[in-house]
Image (cartoon, rainbow, N blue to C red; front, side, top):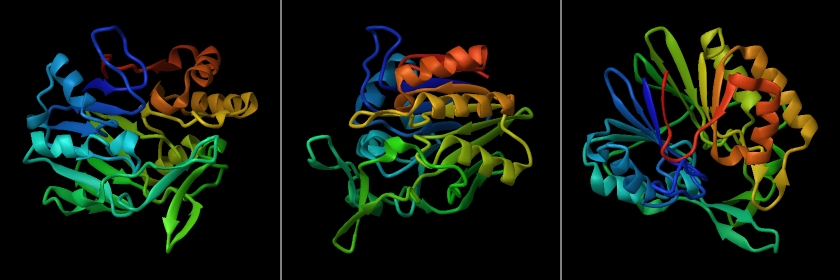
Length: 273
């Protein structure tokens, strides 16, 4: 299985551009998959540099209804006329962020795109194929990240705290290896892994995605919280590749505790698992 990082907050070199967002290309023996499309058309530019033809992608999964994961959707639909786009049925709702100066900023996805014939609305557990599955509806047994603070949804004219019911995760199985991909883990990476274990009866072999341990407006999670997460992740025996909203400082603390069990994915990086 080949994974190429098309968009992330950082880049491996000046040859690749970066932005606050995430887009991953995954190639299995049978399928070419895109997980998120970043905040803009940047994923397309970096894809060309990584020899990825977006028109050949078979499936696109959008992790949740925030612009930094679905902002490039219109560009994708212009470039690819065949792929099914799996997105949660609540992802086109109105989502906002409160910045530090109390400015309210729309951070959702263009609602007009919901009418596109390639869009497939999902919920709960959804099977793409025998080897690919999407799940949402994660129960918060552990606290969700404090860095979710200031993320809101509009409901009947009122601004409410986002419950992240629109967030979904992707499972891919190949050659007895199971990969779990998260977008931002707004529901909490521990909660997501516990939900995975409930579904599969075991932990994944690999996990890729952001853990939302950092917020541009509200800073990082506490060292105690990060240490608790690192211990839990180590106990799963999985290999982790993180990025985007995990934050560099929280990642460095995770890395210090987890060693080779965790690595970072920047724009332009390719891994084989």
